[in-house]
Length: 260
View 1 (tube, rainbow, N blue to C red):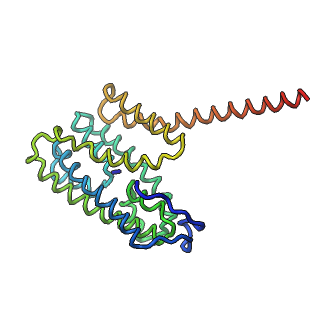
View 2 (cartoon, rainbow, N blue to C red):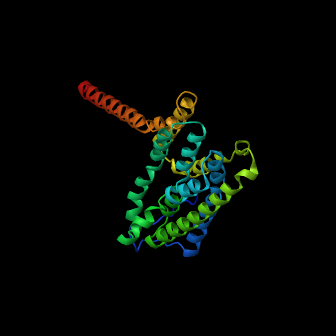
View 3 (cartoon, rainbow, N blue to C red):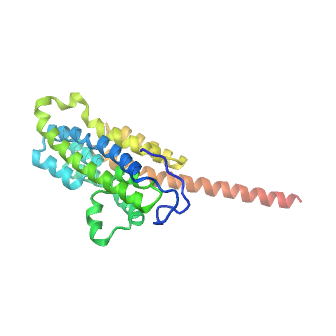
């Protein structure tokens, strides 16, 4: 659905329960509440957009309760509103949401939650909880950040989804308000600080160009699927460039030795 604090420096790392550079619990809660409240309120935009796309109140609320990943939810209702095939719309939403599985691999190591809590925690593994949890210097801080962000965001997102869906009729033409852009804007705001390397920035840029360029050509929902090809494409180009540089360096070394 959608980066806040700079990563604190510590020697032990969050994987260690006794890592140095402890952060006060109040500071962690403050950061987590800031993200949870700011993003949770954008659930209103989803409720309005979903209702304006023709989904019922029950369907709209079920998406927020069960899916609970804003980018995927907006992608689904946006594709349906544009007249896209339901299967294509669902596929686009699925591939957007699959990134949360990769977040979960990392968060499971940091949080080390009891086995009984893991299925419940999995529902809260999204962009925002990951963004708050990863920079924390200790496991305790990571758990607090994850829990407060997840709880606040889940409660507010679902409440504002309900309010938005109920108030959609009063707003009239929902397209004129541009509320469907709220969640993607928040998502980009969270994503941008995480793009630290040139490879990550190039991948994100290429994915955006693919999605925008193919939007007028492909059916609704399909550009999102195609944009995923940006990652392997950049990695292949990077690999070839690295191989070429290594080969040039090797040839240069051989030539120098031969000259001597």
